[in-house]
Image (cartoon, rainbow, N blue to C red; front, top):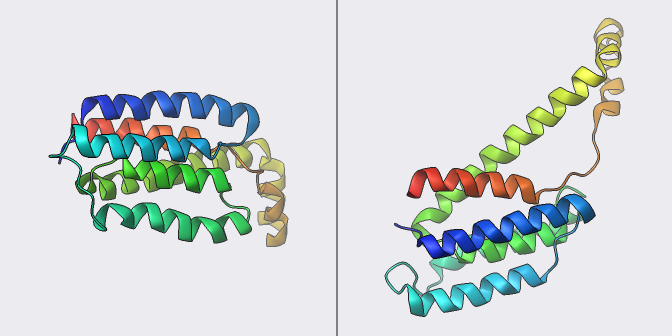
Length: 165
């Protein structure tokens, strides 16, 4: 399956803008999901070999809406993040959706581990104290605050380019 270059560029430009906004405000507007819905409808007509209207193309978008709600309630993911991902998956051809999802998982885990390592290094005295005293509850202090997720999505999008071009 091939992702048409114009649609890849649209996604890239969107993610650059959204990442910048998300870093500044920690919010992704719901309008971006609507933009991707319009891009998808356009792609159905412009790239009929890559896009078809089927239930299969809706699996990942619906999953992000359904799974995103409890993740939002738990404070793990912002509501805008899951809505944006639902819209973004619409502009990814069905044959590439799983690949992008795995890239998203990989970039999420990588970024989370890097942030955790930074926190451990910054708080090495706390970590050493926890290991000496075996007071494992002290590790709760390493819990970070919410971080902007759009740059993580951007990383997964850039990774997708290595697979399709």
